[in-house]
Image 1 (cartoon, one colour):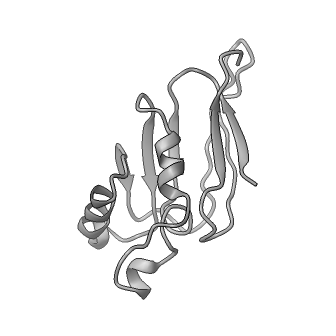
Image 2 (cartoon, rainbow, N blue to C red):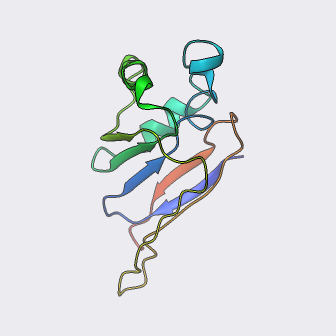
Length: 125
């Protein structure tokens, strides 16, 4: 059963991992190619066009061309890819809006299980 992610009607910034969330973890090394995980395309299609998508990956810069080609071939939209990120936690720090809107949301998914999240826009937030 997917998690429900209720978001405001404002534009959002998505910081997404790549390996183990959108594609098979280390598939580009193990299989010499990437493989989309179940539900990845559906999840990515839920992200509104007004939103900014930033992939953050521990992949080395030498895999940039291969990674970008794969994403383009599969119609996966993004704005920025950051390569060479450390293997540890990814931390997002942001302030709350005066009206109470919490401007940082984070969740973990099981590696290679895909992103089982349903994105809903809530105009009351």
